[in-house]
Length: 551
Picture (cartoon, rainbow, N blue to C red):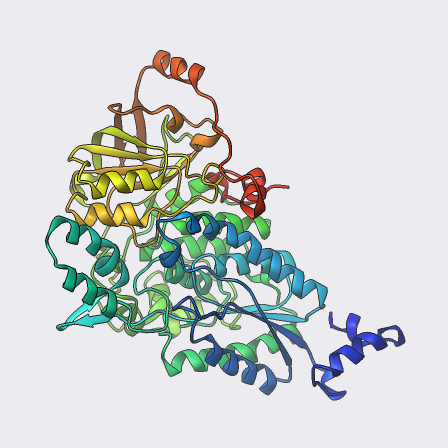
């Protein structure tokens, strides 16, 4: 066992003495040492219940003959960090989390790893770490939140708070109604109720084979989630004894499965960033173009928020990710998972319990998958849009640019009623380097929807979007403005063309005018001069490469 490095030999007397100080026995020294990385915190609803799940993981490890050791990793709630400078730290925290898990596990020579996670950047950060460590690992995603309820109507965070701000500004709802929605939309523990980034990554983790069947959609407050936590604790000890490694599970074929499941679900656009970054750590070749090619061949068979009206609890009651795999069995690679079952075995054992929530692939909600990659002179390296959350009338759009050099300036214009039909809002200098940190733009996109402008106004940015964003919102424009991407020289009134079906984004300005503008342009100074974000800005790569840190 790897832990023998700290347990065996005369020269390890000091290490053993320190281990005995933790309360373990001599007999325990012969057992596998299992690290449990937990993101439990009081500030994130998706994590406040993890102390209970920790108990069940601990129970499972002990029952199987392992010794659990818990350590904490940080977490950021994107919903709370949204709309201000705190969001700069969200994507950047992914790299910190990967580094922390790698550091603690390697320093203490653990034999196996359980990752207890849920929200947006924590799950991909932990997955990245497992690629570096390549020791037996398993994931427990802590589960979705139940829907809220008001007067018999189900509520969700994005539609009934973020988008409600726009409806309030438009005069459609009162201050009292807005206050009521705030109180009722999020009834308790769990990741926000739709296929936003947290739940999208949970589904991807299960599709990658790194969590047990049913884990992704098992509700946060359910006894089923407790049982899954215990089962995962038991399984990690078995994985250690059999030496089944993450790189054995997460091969190229597993990444292809994950993208297919993501496209069928209509998951968050952030999954593009994260899967590119995770694949890099696993040394699996993956490009942004793979998402588009797979999306073109994968029908969208669910209709979950923000793309439709169903909630994560509906997906759970319909059979969860195993039922999705059953529908897609002939499209998926039959590879092994951490559960000891193959993908086909999981699919065969599954049942589809609601024919509307999980449709047959011959009767999809949309013929193509959730995400499209658009290219053109504005984004030669690519840009990302959730096409299943765009109305038919906005699949092709020509508008005139309204340019803003920050999210705040754009939000001010929206709330002041200065955005009109036919505008194409351009938010720049919000990319990985320019932000720095590539902030999510849920506040402006939700306000546009709430004000009834989603079928007449588009938004493009070198930043990114929440998984809750809907409408013709195109992010991850690469190259970004800070490094001289074409978005840097767009001016108010310029004509911009979006054609999602043809995967095109174009700035209709002559080559001569573009050259003239670039002759006068110079990159602004990086906004952050010290601290972590300054270091992050120095080393971060393009969004088209996953916004990874290059050393």
